[in-house]
Image (tube, rainbow, N blue to C red):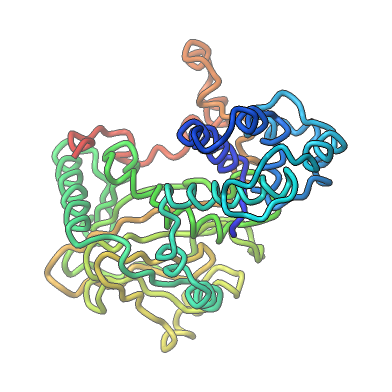
Length: 390
């Protein structure tokens, strides 16, 4: 059984538990329902979902994140939970082998967690896609291909949306172009330009894998979105420069800073600009130079991947867009995620939300820059799309 690893998901399963009780009231007596709705029962269940024991409740005293997640005003003392747990008022109704309330709640907790995972589509297929073999390949090489995530029809639809938005931005002169003769196009801020594309970021398999990659000893959210954009490499487009995506001073820390997902909406082939990387370079912990690329030229690999798959790579990996030697444009959908503790350090207070517009208008440009109001405003990022609901 997988335990809940964040306050956010703990809150989701607590809400699910209350809804589940309302739907299954006929399976319990009025006395059982009364007991299950008590704070003591919810606290014990929540500790169980977090993989904790009753003795560890003291670690959560005065923890506002835990209290808010389970929606109780204060935590019962350890002795109070013990007294509740050794009672036998809760009969076994769910196929377990309980002799007291604690055993019953553990059995119930397993049932709730299993049904919660089913609702989120965290099923055996999701776990198999991110199995030990895939995880080990990622650890060794810094990237991995996950096949059969999207259907062919979904891929075609997503690609069409990107092409339409790109044409629209070109026509209204808000598009971002780069590369030789400005033939490459990047479409920023896809969350604000397509509802369908935004939903890709919350696919169960995305959450499942990102939570694993960014896992650390905390119950706070493990990761956050850094950027969500599309890239169009034109037919005949040249390869780009080697780089990594962890823009931090050297030496680069060994822990994960950033992870990228490329949703493959058309086949990535050896000829159409598949991403090129140096497998294992994420362990070098330094930024690549031109001489590094020449030195390792024979070891470079193209991330060839079939339509409908995802390619995941760590931000430490040396990589670049390959040459598109075909005569057709190739579309890439790129989601970039970052460790959430970085934003906690840089943006402990979310100034964009908590500062009033009237006050903002009186700020100097220097103060606005300090508060990051001008950060991330790339060309075309704020342009609106008529394809948002497509």
